[in-house]
Length: 147
Image 1 (cartoon, rainbow, N blue to C red):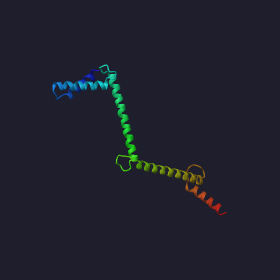
Image 2: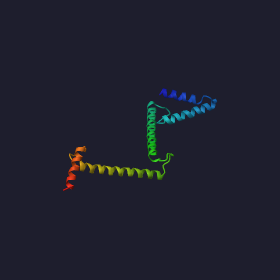
Image 3: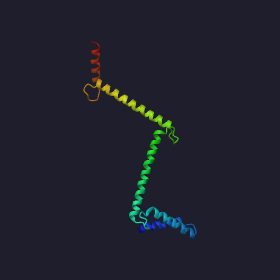
Image 4: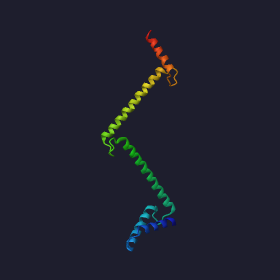
């Protein structure tokens, strides 16, 4: 607790270094009030180490939350702000969402084509189609057509 009191006194002295005596007292009192308002959780006029630790821990959690929100905002802008002006218009968001929908549909189509290809050519069901397997399938299909 003494360490916090010393810090508060040093803060008050630094804040009031170049003003007159009356102004110094006023500024010192304002600094003390701000300090107490910030750290005196139970409002008893003193700051315990537990109070200061809890306040600093909460402030750190708020900073981390703010950093996460900023990162999320940046990610959102990077995704939707097509022209890079720092604003997302309805047209920009609709365009991005339509492109993403088209990409998903293309991926589904490719996945279906891949699955169909594997059903046709993967004779042993191992998920791979070496040239030998594909040649055998094509030869068998050719023979069936020529019958």
